[in-house]
Length: 357
Image (tube, rainbow, N blue to C red):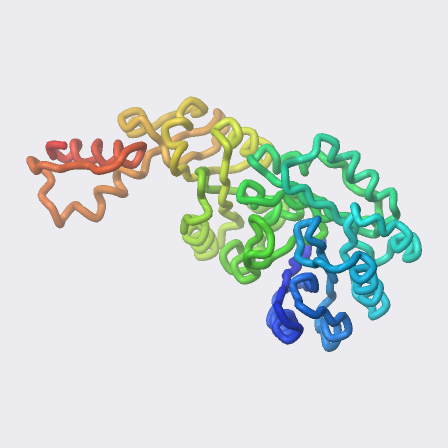
């Protein structure tokens, strides 16, 4: 069964929250963040709902906005359960063990968030959380690298009848959000500006084609730091869609090239684009380099082959294409402003057409 898409909705007022809840029609379930509402009304939040819901009232000490007493917060969660919420999010650190036991774990999503990194004893955390009897467990860590995201893949699968949601927050963890099935999650969250690295609902559906990604989908990506501003995922995923290719292109913000290679091997990436600051650094890991790569000293396109990774440089022809036919480059004087792989590619391209650089 494919992982579900959960839209996180917030609002300063109940009317805003309900309006956003009802607007998220394309989601499989809705997370209602009552901690964002000034005067949360559980009955109003659940009334008239058309989709399954997860009710969350996250306290400030767990990264949320609820500042009231724990007794009040517990009453909100208990009321949501009484009204038939499909899940309520109960923080592991809250100590509401009796609430979990009273429900025999049913409809309880027990959650833990680490905003500082990845705990060394992550597997022990998961084991202890499932030992409470909760029906589902959510573990969210902060990924400072792609390798941090891989730590989620090392967790053992839950017992039959139990579910989990694994999230690597921050830009380096985006793959865990876009590929929930491969990370063993029963759903993934979508929503603009709610959590570090979280992606909006429509972008998940349209740009990353969430519904079309399956176990056989080929993985490609953009290696760089940062990469969140890039239009490459939108362009490449639209291209895959246009030609009917079962593939998805991910933003991959790496700590260094070794970080990328470890991720690429574990997730079996088929190819990648490379942007700053890795175009020169990536060369050491290539089995084959096309002549332009050697000439420029940088690669921006990688392809996984049987004999290792092959590197190409498309910056040179990409730079020349809009100029040729418009400017007589042979014999002209040209200045290149900038540095790094793109500047070197521009210099090589100009010199190759006879310009004095």
